Image (tube, rainbow, N blue to C red):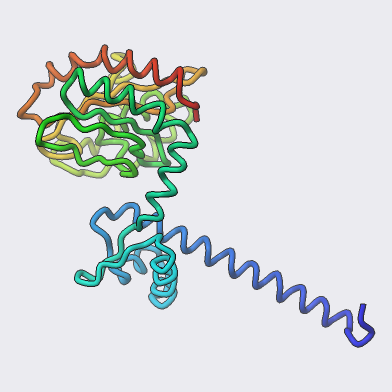
Length: 272
């Protein structure tokens, strides 16, 4: 040690260094939090809206958004003064999807299902209190399903989400049934907790989940779970259609096809 450096000065320097590292880590956490919030805003949000939702000072939010925009993680729409997730996020998401085998392994199976149904096929996993769309193949029809890869959706109003809840590990299922926000996205959304529990029990008995205009007016879907080695769902597979194209009975006729595809995918995909 330099004789001119007192022990107290060294301790102060170390404390200052640790504080600096802590501040940087905290700012990284705040920046990541902003990206998560933007992921819930498909139409984007203003800096003021993001600041309010993140419960951060506007100046901090604005500075972080500027850094994220500069590095391509966020896009800024000058006309509407709104921020959106940037292309860099999509690129990283695609790498994660490829790393976990979803893209290369799942897509041929989804395409085959769509060829047989003529409708959109969707593969989702659970992300906390949401489902995350990891793969989707659109049908040949003009009317598209809007749940694109990377989309975070409700667990309580979608067929894929309800299947993930119904066939989750027992303690996790009970936790979700007690804590999951039951938001009314349409007049048909289930918002009563006892009614949602009854819906989940019905799904467990019959082996598949149905969404009939609960998530989006004019759309219905049927979904089945992908089971891991312990018998719990690590993903779910769905066929989604506009209500004018298939009745609920006709849609449910696709369940055996979906179950066959789900079993194939469960054998091939890495289980979470």
